[in-house]
Length: 246
Ligand SMILES: [Zn+2]
Ligand SMILES: [Zn+2]
Picture 1: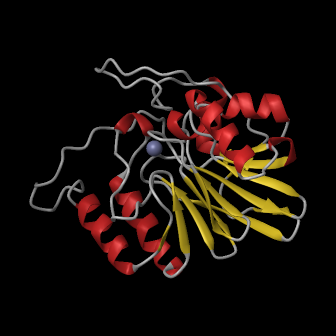
Picture 2: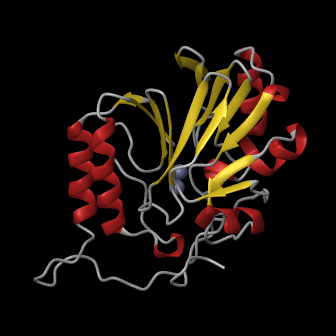
């Protein structure tokens, strides 16, 4: 299933996985997330129905290292040969297909899925501009859900991965991914400057950003921050060394 949510901005929705977005520019297509390896066929079919040729992809962005968003990117890059942009803290786990940090395996569960490693041409820190034709794409470091999460702003469209869903829901926190509720709350507060813009999330439909969604997510996240009185969720040290994953 696909829909053109704004002129030249396509939402591809393979059921049961991460959302995939394609922006059509005068210089070719820009892909934001790829979905998992198992979604490849559905995404290709949807692109065909939308009259988008994957051979026209010139650039791809990754919102974060999770398998449901980037697990299939390795194949797309091999097949169509475009550079991939990811946050530098997500790049290593994506290139090495780190099973835990990419959530391809969830410790203490039977969950295990395929992850196709993908070279990252541009590991970024946030604040970099990329151009394709008439469009500019700004990277924004957005830690919280994972340490290497990134938003991408292009015109009035903001791609946010698993930071914030339409209902005000938030992506899971897990220490193995470098999740951090304090960072998350700061990331949310920085999203307030985008109220009124179209948010394109990693799960579910795109929506116009309102303060109330940010407030709902903030209340959820604050539950995980220990209060001065000792309530809250016990903290465990991050799986990452201080200067990020090796
Ligand atoms: Zn995620
Ligand atoms: Zn996800």
